[in-house]
Amino acid sequence: MRREILVYPDPFLARKAVPVGAVDDRIRTLIRDMFETMYASEGIGLAAPQVGVGKRVVVLDVSPVDETIAPVAVVNPEIVLRNGSVTGVEGCLSVPGVQGEVCRAETVEVRGMDEQGNPLRIRAAGILSRALQHEIDHLEGILFIDRLSSSAAASAK
Ligand code: NI
Image 1 (cartoon, protein in one colour):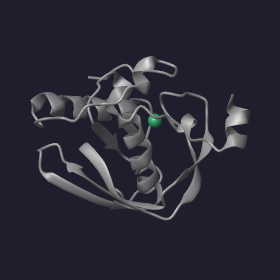
Image 2 (cartoon, protein in one colour):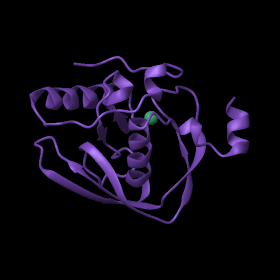
Image 3 (cartoon, helix red, strand yellow):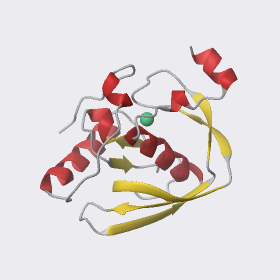
């Protein structure tokens, strides 16, 4: 079922999400709905707070940018390693019509659980690295517009 995407400045987007205790059918339904919602809006990533659920769940499918990367859902994602830094353009389904340059770690290692509750480890570079950092920010109540370089922020506001 497609869910409504909250749009900035909805205060829910600024709230910190809580960890998922057990990956049960309710979480799996949430993940399925998040993929459906993301695809319907032609996004490459979505975090649960964007559909009004304050839980630490993200889904990503960056295949429109890099077709070699499969879709993935991560429950309780945590960045355990970061290396380098790189600036790139981002947008967000919750901030329609705005794009801006954001500096992110070049590569990350993320740990969490998959939709079966099994441990998951992702080593990411390129668009997947950027998208993971963007989505995990949502779980902390941080939007990409909070991280724009000062000149870009000035032109976005
Ligand atoms: Ni976003």
